[in-house]
Length: 257
Image 1: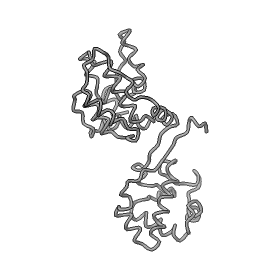
Image 2 (image 1 turned 180 degrees about the horizontal axis):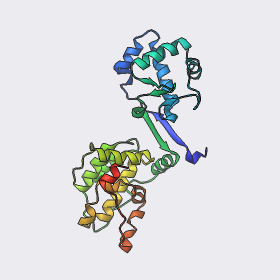
Image 3 (image 1 turned 90 degrees about the vertical axis):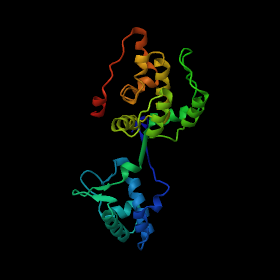
């Protein structure tokens, strides 16, 4: 595989992972700590396969194979698999596939290019996009808050994206609505990161703040739609010179994508 086509995956464990009731129940069993380690190894093995575990398309894993790939005693594998299944932490499908039921909540990933862009942005001055001289100026307090919002560790953070948009526009968009969650997550799944959303918001503000009709477009359904990347590099605004605005999708169309 070309390294540029590669995706990077990781597991996201909450700091209270070992305080969860199901984990505490497992640890309370004889060999419980080995069961938890076995579970974590299964999660790690599944992250590149969307939470599924099979040896190949024709052959599912059996207990002996699981013992081999996780370096776990087969008796531990047998007992742990039953307990994890009883606790609904794994699902044994009819074709022998093992599905890690919590993987969608614990999986993080980004593409090679997203990783490269993120590393490059660490070397850049994040406030290098200045508003147009004719745009109404924002308070110094907001600019200071922006510095706090710009944090590459806040990836997949829908709430702070919408909070920043509201502070920039004076609107009160909610970060809990279905269409907003769907459209922001769609961009995260394409490999974009938190800082990209801040840049898109700032770029749109710079171009639209002097026109009430255009300023009305500063909402999640337009800023974060399929034209997101062109808003990131400002090419979406090339139409300003020839007065040919791009066609925007409706919220309904975006939600049904």
